[in-house]
Length: 475
Image (cartoon, rainbow, N blue to C red; front, side, top):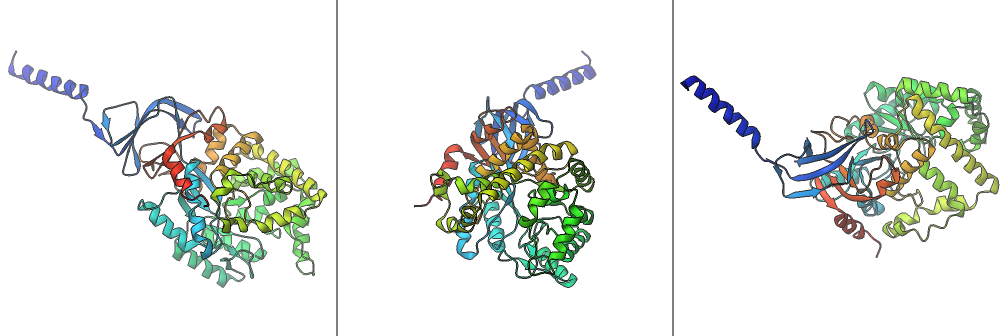
């Protein structure tokens, strides 16, 4: 053998030897042999192993030489991205700050690794919790927050920023940007038509995401055309599906000059009666065109409809809700008990109509965001488990389990411009994951079978999750 051939042969032997014995990669956590649920395609990738390092997914693929201090054998189980609850509240003032903080483990225990706080009066506390969670000092979901809501004078919710004039709108947005909130939440308790639309337009100029409750003095088209990014709940969408929306809007505007202004609930029966499928279809196309998302919150609508006749005293999760938060339920309870039989019957009809909108919105290509509306004042809408109830209702309404999962994972990440780092299982994404005993694509209720949760790359076993939840149980 000549010298050149010997060198070539030796080099090839070295290459093949290296391929036969690749170096062992080291990670902080390995999840081995999982069935990975791809929420974008609705498919399952079998026998996938994940290597997690520094809070992010560093490897996804077939088993390979690797080592880590912790390894989870996920054989036969299903791995999904952590769930996003896109409508929660932390509120009640400083006296309820600790009680709100104690809600955080309840989200993790049910697979919710990210929440969107939809406005309240605990903004400094939320930023403190976020820093503590990032430092590993507190267990809980990632929190995106709007900070204080924008509303009109003498707003209903404490902590709201009151706006009427363009100057006040600019000052309010300046303050929210200084706080570095993640988006802007508008509310309709006393806000004027002009302030509502003006705030959306100014926020759009600044590149800020906007969402909220709409005053009935405004049409959904007007808001979407100015840049509204999402509408919360379905009351405002339903009005846009009426063939009398313009006249109903004008009637509400005129009533403001009288001693008896018309509110949302006074107008809803007329909105319901004038629902028009053709107008609804036009509205859905308009929402898709303007990329305006919808947060249905079916779960709280159903719960409130059933509240007059449901005894929640035996609820097992009530033991994990601090007495101070339980006391905030009194207003809704009193209102529910005072409802007339006619009102109760109408609420059931309204809920049924809301349910029919869901598959139509999905078919029209409107982005749906799954949110529970859990938090103080929203009676018995328990953190974490209520989002699972929301997803089950979305499927009962006509979505596939895959579509419901999208509403609680990638859609939320896309809406909050976090999709490059979250929402799916891929290399480089944040390691927020949930391991389930069974396939949620076959039955969405399998989301209730949590085996373990990974949050910020940290593993929480079923035992760990039970310990976290028991630590906040009422004595």
